[in-house]
Length: 375
Image (cartoon, rainbow, N blue to C red):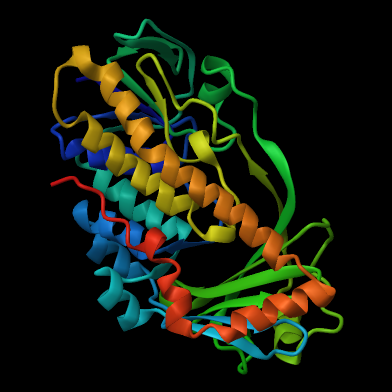
């Protein structure tokens, strides 16, 4: 089967790697001349690491990643610890795979290096003019006419395939903004627990930090509803205020989403990753769900004739949709909970503190314990 993949990011490369397990050598079309993954950190929960293991990449990823021993939730004003959710050995024992955090560029490099040996990677190759009669897809890439039995659109939240071919709306503002930064270890306040994943809840924003680059750097992300040059540090616990002050420059990103309920499959074309279901980062699952998509798509395509391609693509969408839509809802609910302030925020903090750490982890079994069937 001739397979074309639009986009050489995490979703596209993971799709190429997963499809290679079925004997398919895909062509990946990346519009950028020089490939680089923007952003900073990415969390790889056990459900994603399990699939990376199946792709033969767990060791390569782990060598560039860090493994936090816990998620520590704190009140931003007082600094009081509300919960400590065990990871490390607890996650390995419970889910059979670790919880890792990694710089996005490091993950991308691992995927690119692995895909280079089993896929045709083409840079400077923008794709457009897509048409499909259901049996195949035709398109233009770098000005040349091309044809494929299957076209996989992994071109991100601003997916041109999503808008031009599927006719879906473009990326839409979620009303939330993220301040992103990466700090060298020497600049991290010594009183901060930099080895764990930290979640700080404040009235104006919530902040997440975790180690990347083997602990050499700290990834810091604050999410709020009002764009400003930097998060406001007034009235916060000293250690959190010190962390904010240690960041010389923030990169402000508007958080965008798409309507994940719209179709992901039409004819011989399928959307995956952010092109299908860009979600808020408040479930820490954007990258993980792109990896899951890749695995599920390959599983749906692993057997059968080309005549059954539409049915297999429909089966892929049907299998993925309930889980993805639940995660998108969870991310939206988490953002609403994190935004609570006043009496509602105090009640939230009490509820978090009342639950033991392992009970918090157990509530995530449906998410982290996902084990797709693909021998």
